[in-house]
Image 1 (cartoon, protein in one colour):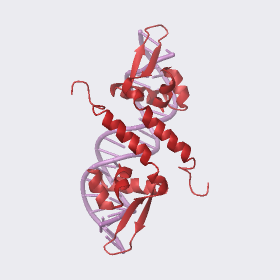
Image 2: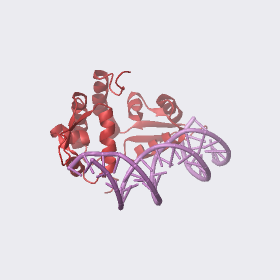
Image 3: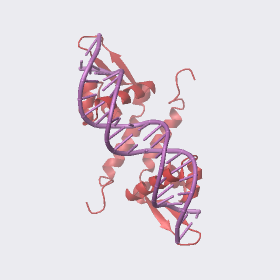
Image 4: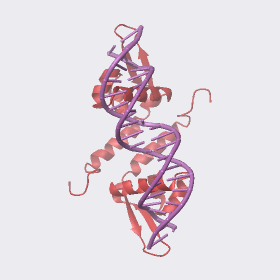
Length: 87
Length: 87
DNA sequence: CAGTATCCAATTCGATACTG
DNA sequence: CAGTATCGAATTGGATACTG
C-alpha cells in the first residue's frame, strides 16, 4: 500500500500514516527503512525546522506499477474474494 | 509460491513440500488450510490407504495467474532487485 | 502419506515516552 | 515533524512426536 500511495505523488511521513489508515508510527518507520534499503524508494530530507522529509519511489519502485495494476485489476474483477461463504 | 506450483498441475502434500524447498510440514499445512478457507484451492481426498490427497487451484485461485505473470515479468526485467549495492 | 499436537525460542507489534 | 528507544503481550515458526 505504500507503493500504491507513492505512485500517486511523493508524500511525507505523517501523510503516509494517514493514507494507510491505522498503521502505527513504529511499523511505518520500519517499513520505509526497509524499502529504502531495498532501493524501492528514496528519502529526501529538506533539512528544515520543523523537520520535513519526503518519500518518493525510485525507478525500481515505480517499475512495480505493472504488478500493482495487475493486483488492482484482479481485485476489481473479484470483488467478493476474501469473504466468508454466507456473508 | 504454492499458487505458482499449482498452476502447473495439481499436487499432493509431500510433492508441494519438495517443490517449495525447505518449508516445514507445519507451515505448509497451515498455509494450505488458510488458502482452502479463502477459496483459492480445493482439497481432494481420495480416501485411500495410505492417505492420498490432492490440491488443485479453484477458479478463484487460477484467476490469480495474471497477477503471478506480472510478478514474473517484473522479476525477469529486474534480475538484480534485492541485492545489496556492491554484491 | 497426510496431517495434528505440543513445546519452546525468536520475532513482531502496539503503546508509550522521548529527542532534535 | 519525523523519527528512535523501550517494554511487555501476542504471534510465529522450527523441531519433534504422535495418529489413522
